[in-house]
Length: 310
Image 1 (spheres, rainbow, N blue to C red):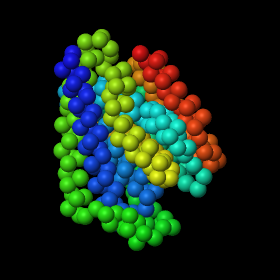
Image 2: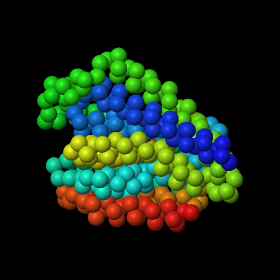
Image 3: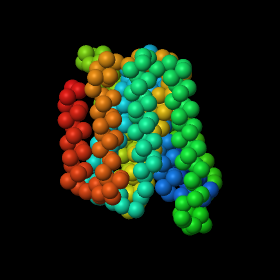
Image 4: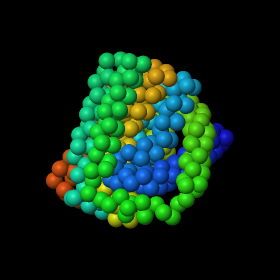
């Protein structure tokens, strides 16, 4: 048991370390190429911080722990909204007015509904994975087609990244890409053994321990963005990460191995994921700030959800 706990801890450490390196490299690369901060948050940062989920889900599916793979994605999306945005708001209230994420939010809801529909039709296999990846392609095309239409000076953005040389950016990217798969393998191995030892289902372990662990890069990126006064990147990171989790991670994982949907997930967790995503609507559409009391309510709601699971 001690070895398994150490494996989980070491795996989480590598995931956080690798995710941080990957995000730093990707953000600096994107800013040098003149992509706006909002689009960086929606795409590069979101996808980079979702890399742990991707590696963990792929590793779990290849090892036959498909419940961990599925629970990891669903649990991460719930944690992203309730725990990460809640904690970020507690540190520094998030101002939503002036940051138009309505279209991206609608894409996130559409991706969530698409997954739920596919889940009720049976296991996620190659056809379902292909559908999710096609949807991801459409989302990326839409996001990147507006990358250079934002009203911001590209030269100013390049200046934000001048502190990092191309060689340093390359080292960050390579380091992240090496640390992430190693950490993912260690985390899945340790988590599976812990679930077996305590008689807890792999789905619950995926929805809680693994999901929270792989969401730590999103937590770090969002809190750092809020502290720097970049609420657009904090919100964009969570919305973009949720889209990527649903469409890319499950799409690619379904191509590797069929993903059966646990019955309890159909009854509760998928709907909690949808409800938590819908919670953002009044804040994004009416410009209501996500202040500290709202952040506290989000965190308490997440704690209540975990309590129900356990």
